[in-house]
Image (cartoon, rainbow, N blue to C red; front, side, top):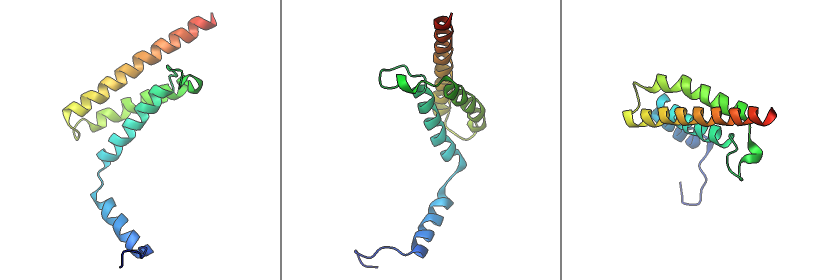
Length: 108
């Protein structure tokens, strides 16, 4: 294949199959947990940039998702990464509880 030729579908499928063979479930879950954590914090709406996105139900779902997945990964990810996720869950839970408390105080 020359420098200017585009790969055909068969070549693309081969490359994708090679990449899929290298994937590990824990790597996918780690990436997913990072995204879930990020979205969970963002949905707290704690900054001027994110306050319009505030959705505490989404934050609650993020917390529950992380609480479910982190224990599954404890045997297959490095201990320091596991600790990071556990701290992220704890921090998200605290921020969520504070936000819910403030929300309830504002209503009464």
